[in-house]
Amino acid sequence: MGLRSLAISSALTFVLVSCSGGDSPTDPVKPPTPVATTVTLSAPTVSLSSLGATQQLTATVKDQTGAVMSSATVTWASSNQLVATISSSGLVTAVANGAATITATSGIATGTAAVTIQQQASSLSLSPSTKSFASLGDTARLVATVKDANGQSLAGATVTWVSSNLLVATVSTSGLVTSVANGTATITATSGSAAAAAAVAVQQVATSLVLSPASVTFSSLGATQQLTSTVRDSRSQTISNATVTWVSSSAQVATVSSTGLVTAIASGAATITATSGSATGTASVTVQPVATVSISPTSLTLDVGQTATITATVRDASGNAMADKTVTWATSDASVVGGTVNGNTATLVAAGAGSASVTATVDGIVGTLPVTVRTTAPKPVASVVVTPSTVTLVVGAKVILIATLRDAQGNVLTGRTVSWTSSNLQVANGTVSGNTVEVTGGTVGTATVFATSEGVSGSSVVTVISSGGGGGVSLTCAGVAGGVILAQDGTYLGKLSNRFDTQSILNTFGSYGSQFSSTSIYNQFSQYGSQFAPYSAYNEFSTKPPILYVNNAAVAYISKNTFKTPRIDPDVLKACTFP
Image (cartoon, rainbow, N blue to C red; front, side):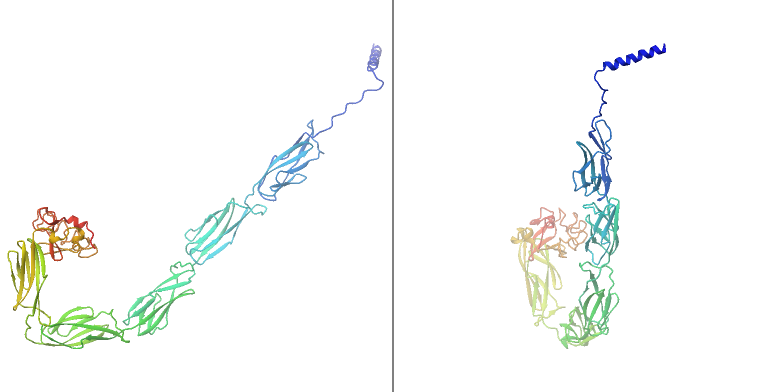
């Protein structure tokens, strides 16, 4: 059985071989030639943060069957060699910030990698690293140099600037430092994670020194004057608390303290010098004390009751008049001669027969005037003058007339009897008090009031009106400017002038315009401003309101009483503007 089976198998094999045809055995099948079909790079993206940095790329080439072609030739190229270069072996090198595409080619197959170059700050340095300022307002620019990890500069790197003490120094967004005050500060520049600091010191240096006052003249020994020094830097900024030393060129004439207080010692001249650093300033000092006090006239003889004006002249050792000196006057016997003083003049009045000395003293220097007073018979009245010489009144208004008596030499006479008369008592009548009379306007008309003493007379013409706006005066702000206001009890209530005049009713701080003054028509509680007082401008029922006089003529009532004419409302006056 086994042998038979073997024979059959052999026969079959023969048949198969015989049926295949041909004379020789079958040839083997050849594999296809490998062709680069894909190129894959080891990194599809490359990011470098410093110039000169490198990264190695490798390319894997595969054929159409997906088999790696290890010996395939690969060429490399960069789309932007200004940003990144690529070597023949696939080494990428960063050249500049930007983007590039690296392409690896094998046959017709390519592979790419996206390259981004963006420098990152690794270090930052400032130049200069220290800065000193000698003046306020000075500026200096700090330059920041930012570099990456390879020490390459970052062009256009963003830098932020901060000052540790803005009261001493400020810094701009571009690194410009400005000195503000004496002291120290640290300027810090930051770019990314890199930072650097510069030390700033501000210490003003004196370049100029000015003294005030620049010149001083003393007229008294021992007198003092405080000098003030102003020290400035090169930008004319004041240096506060600057150290200043003081010296006098002649301590025998004038001394100066460590604080600049000058004291007059003796006659002469000196120069005071103040120094701060290299800056100096000077002030000239002249000491001219009082040398003489003289009185003019040098002697005086008066009759009892007579007056005379005398003048004291103060001079220094050079004979120069010293007008600013205060003169102290005195009399040795007031029962013989007395008087009143006005600065360097005095008006003497002979009080009784005898002799006395009048002295004028300045800084211990005395001038003397001998005075003799004689007893003589009273001199007769030579003239009588009544003031005002003309006056216009509204009916019921009052005015005071004054008679002045003089002798033939023009000297005022006192203690004489004066009699008063009126040419028309219906028009002008009054109350006499010595050489004065208070005249009241009666009826409309004109009267002459006479004052007579020792047969000599003077007169005043009094005109009384009832209406008509004061004889043609325009009852406007301009028309009444300069007028005065009198209450019908004779009290002076101010005048119509600008608000700076102490007598103006518009001066709200003065005696005639203040709401608190007893003589103001605008004080609602005074007898001239209350709505209930009989002499008030604001009493709508008053029959005796204040009267406005312009050029000595009564022109209108100042009143809220609409029945009084002519009339000006007090609130209208308050709204006026007077020169």
